Length: 96
Image (cartoon, rainbow, N blue to C red; front, side, top):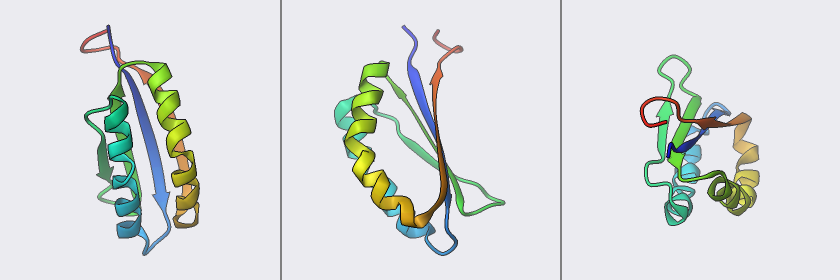
């Protein structure tokens, strides 16, 4: 069975990038405890305040549990963010 993936685009206020990275890293153990072993955070080379996160999940129910668990933490990050978009994606290749 193919994984379900999440993908986030985080636009951080200038000067708050390192603070954001530290806060994002605090989310990783929560996801790992629920079954997402490979959370990744990338930083745009041209727009250094834009980050992309992604990772596989075993199913939608696990994603929903994760999002419910981290909602207060992400809410606390709002003051350092210009915007945040989240996506849920079905794996097509390889795997699906």
